[in-house]
Length: 182
Image (tube, rainbow, N blue to C red; front, side):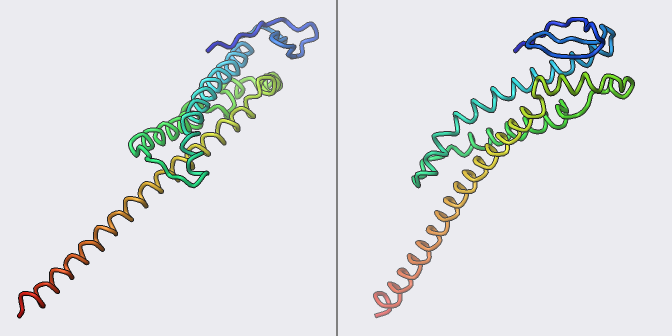
């Protein structure tokens, strides 16, 4: 995944974005760091957008089956693996990568706040992050619901085994009392 942008020196010392050309007030290191930070976040979001999209596609048949009322055989281990992947993606996006946090360079150079805000808007970082986060939450809820269904089916099966064992025990006791007790 590559995000490319052409940098141009602004004639009026104001930042602007026109397509793939970003006009910046200067080519100082802090300015380049802000541009690089936004481009990096865009690449990270693109990676997660692709990952979330493929997970959505993989879960679609299962969700469609649940929606139509027919519960198909669900691979419990696969569900747990996918749930773990979703949780790791959320943890990386929010914690380690900190897509929504302002870059550290802005602490030392607050005059670059406008450039950062403009680039953030141009690359739709906040909107894309919210969309990916919403999709990850939906995937997590879908997987959790499926896991709950699998667990309830298993517990129902165990309850039936217990009932069958009780009925067999009663039958054996009755057999002992009436047939053998004569």
